Length: 175
Image 1 (spheres, rainbow, N blue to C red):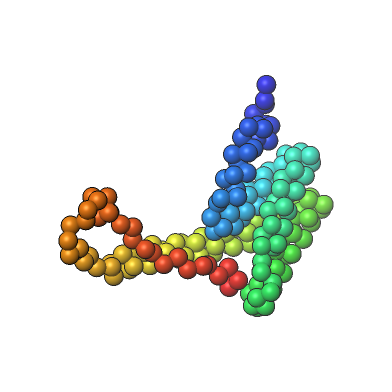
Image 2 (cartoon, rainbow, N blue to C red):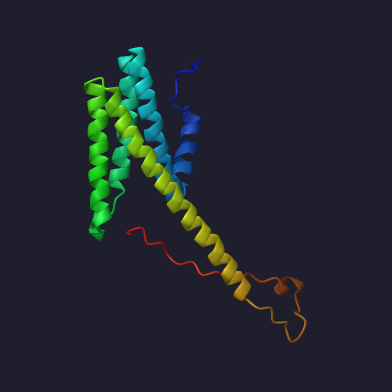
C-alpha cells in the first residue's frame, strides 16, 4: 500500500505523465518549472524550521533541478543581453538555495524564492500577452475571410463544408 507521503507516480501513471510533459505547451512548461521551484524552496524553508534535514534536502534538490532546467532552456546563441542576465540570475538563485541549505539560512531561501516569484509573475505576463495575441490573430484571420457563394450547387453535399486555412507561423523562441 502506498503512503500519502510517497509522491512518486505509480508505474502506469508515469507513462501518462511523460506524455503530458512531452506534449505540453512550452509556455506552460516554463511556468510550471517556476512554480515547482517556488513551492520547493517554500517547503525547504518549512523543513528548515521543523529541523527535518532529509526532507529539506529533497526539496532543495527539486528546486535546484527546476532552476537548472530553466537555465538550460535559455538560447544563448541569440546573444541578447537579457539572456545573459537571466542566466546570471539563475546562477544567483542556485547559489542562494545552496547557501540556504548548507548554512541553514532562511534568509537565503527567502531571497531565492522572492526572485523566483518575481520571475514567475513576469513569465505569467508574457504568457498572457502571447496567448492574447494568438487569440486576436485568429480572430483577425477569421474576420478577413469572406464568404463567396458557389456558382452552382455542389454534387456532393459534404463538399460544401470546407476547412478554413489559418496561417501557422513558426514561433521564434530565441527572443
